Image (cartoon, rainbow, N blue to C red; front, side):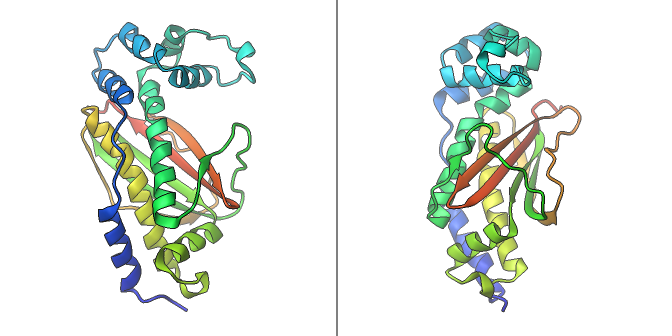
Length: 246
């Protein structure tokens, strides 16, 4: 039984106006502003990263993708990692923590659900058809944000937000809710890019059902997948960005 056509759009519009994006942490802002300037030296970037143990650890993991443990790292210093993976990766890694907080905040605020990043090695790819929301952005930086979840998860979230049962929702109502969630996550990432001096604008969200689960990485882009888990549901956020398109 379909929900009234106007209800989902109105409620999600109201929530979008009330939802506040967390400000970019000072350390991330300094780093992203530095990286956004193409003339930034690796030495200056390395100094900032060295002051953040968590960011340094993520950088080294990204520079050693085939290593199972830190003992297997062939690249062991921040400077070597920068030389190996490049400045675009640094910008994406610096934004991971603000993105994680935005996702957790969105699920807590909109759906009253506690969501946490998946532990390394626990992510299970979706092999069946799932819901994929896509928001692209363009400007000085270009790229996209994908949000992926199973149809049952999408229906559960929409039902919680709209105060209805899943049986009362049609696909359009579910799409409205997932699109709004996609806008919130992409909006956080876009806000951080703009704070770094990489002005860009978002396109409207596009919601599809697909069995394709590959991380989308166009030529010139860097990409990362973040997995989240809570209350028997899994959500994946894919970020792909090219910060230097001009």
